[in-house]
Length: 318
Length: 318
Image (cartoon, rainbow over all chains, first blue to last red; front, side, top):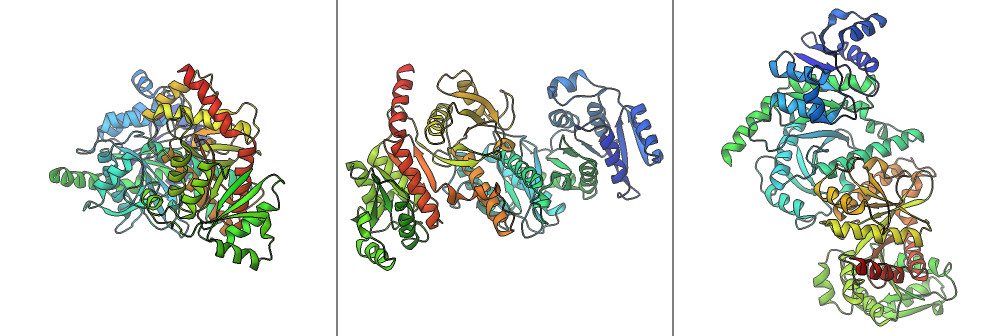
C-alpha cells in the first residue's frame, strides 16, 4: 500500500515530518511505501542532510502550503497546488491508499471528504481518538469535534463506526459501547442523550453497555465512548491539558505517560471511503511516525471496506 | 447566623457528618451556630460517644431519611419528616439561614427550590464548583449538572451568577468570564455556544473574556467558566476520576492535591433566595466541615442579596 504524508503540515514541519517519515519507513513492511507530498526541493534537501536513502520514498511535488490559521474551505479552493489539496487528489485517483498529515485539520477534513466522499448511509463522518485505560488497553472516544451538534441518529452511527474501529484496530472482539452521559440511569442526561439512549438500548448493530460518566472515562466499563463532537472535544483537550501539567510537574508513571498524544499519532476520520489520519498540530517525529503507522494498519485491516459493508447492511435494515 | 446540616446525608452518615460538624464548630465564629437536623437520639448518642459539648449545637429532630437512590420529587413529597424536607422547612421559615448536606442531591435541590424559590429574574438556578488553577487561586465552573439543556439566555445568566460568586466568595475584583467551547474564535462551537457568544460579547453585566477550551480549564484565561450542565458535569467528573487515579498512584503534589473535592466541601446552588450547599455523596468529615464553612461564608458575605440586587437591575434593563 501507499500512504501519503503531508510533509508541510504541522508546527514543526517540514523537519520533523521528514524525521517521522524516516522512523515510520524503518518499521513498515516491504509492501508499504510512504509518499512524501510537498515541495520537492525542500524534501530532497532534508533527506540529503539526513543521509537518508531517498529511494525508499516516493515524492510528489506540491509547491504551495495551507497554513494553520487559514479558513479550510477557502484555502482548499484557493490553493490547488498545496500539499493537502495534492494529497487529497492522489487519494481520489488511487495513487495513494491513505492520507496523513498534521497540518490544518479543517482543510484536511474538507479536502478528504470532497475527494473520497462519505460512505453510503453514513450521515456525518466523525473523528476518533484513543483513551488509555488504567487497567491496560485503550478505549475509543468519538466524535472529538467534527460534529459539534450531533443528532441521535448520528450518535447511533458513531457507535457503529466506533465498534468497527475497536474491533479491527484494537482487536477487541465484541466492544462495549458506552454513551457519555451525566448519570447511569436511562432517563438521565440532556435531551440528546435521552433520545440516543432510546435508539441504542435494543441495538443489534453493536453491544450497548449503557451510560458512562466523566468518571468512567479511564475504567473498564466501555471500549467505545460515544459523545457529540462538542463534549468529546472538551474531554480530549482536558486530557491533554492534564497530561501537560503532569509532564511539567514530573508526575508521569507507566500509566499517566500513556496519555501522551505522541503514542497515538493522530485521529482517524471514520465514515469516509478511504483512510485518513489527522495529526496534532504540535506533532513531534514520534507522533508523525505513529500517525503513519496507524494509517497503514487501518488500510491493511480493510477497515474502510468493513465500514462500507456494515453500512450497506444497516441501510438495508432501516 | 444558623447553618443547618443534614446529619443523615452522605454515604458515611451519620458518623462522619457529626465529625464534620464538630470540626466546623471549632472554626466558625461565635455568632455562627450549626443546627443538626436528623434523628435526635442518634445525634445525641454520637455526640455523647465523642465526648462533645452538645450545647454548641442546636438539634432539630427529623425521624425519616431520604436515601441516595430515591426519586427526588417523590421522596420529598412522601417523606415530609425526612431530614432534607425538615431542613428545607427550617430554611423557609427562617429558623436556619443556610442549608448544607451530602445526601440525595436531587432531593436537596428540589426541596430547596420549592421552599425558598428562585431569585426574581433568574430563569434557571444552577450549581457551581471550584477548579484549582495551576498558578494559584481557583476558578468557578458552572453549571455542573442542574441544567443539562441550557439555552443561551440561561448561559448568559450563569455568567452573571458566576461573576458575583467569584467576586464575593473568591474575592476576585473583576472576574473574567470564559465560555467553554471547542475553539477560540467567535464562530466556533455548537449552536448553543455560538448563540451564547453572541449574547455575551458586548455584555456590560460581566467581564467577558471570550471562548476557552478544555485545555484552558486549569490556566489563567478565565476566573469563571460557563458551560451547560451536561458539559460541566462531564468536566467535573473527569477531574474527579483523574484525581482518584493520581491519588491511588501516589502522583499528588502541591498542585494536584488541590483537586481533592474535600477541599471545597460542596457545590453551592446559585440563583435561589437562600444559601444552599450540596456535598458530595462520598463526603468525609473534612469535606463536611468545608461544606459548612462555605455556606457560612456565603451567608456572611450576603451573596444571595447581591444576586437579588443584580437580577433586579438586570431585569429592569431587559
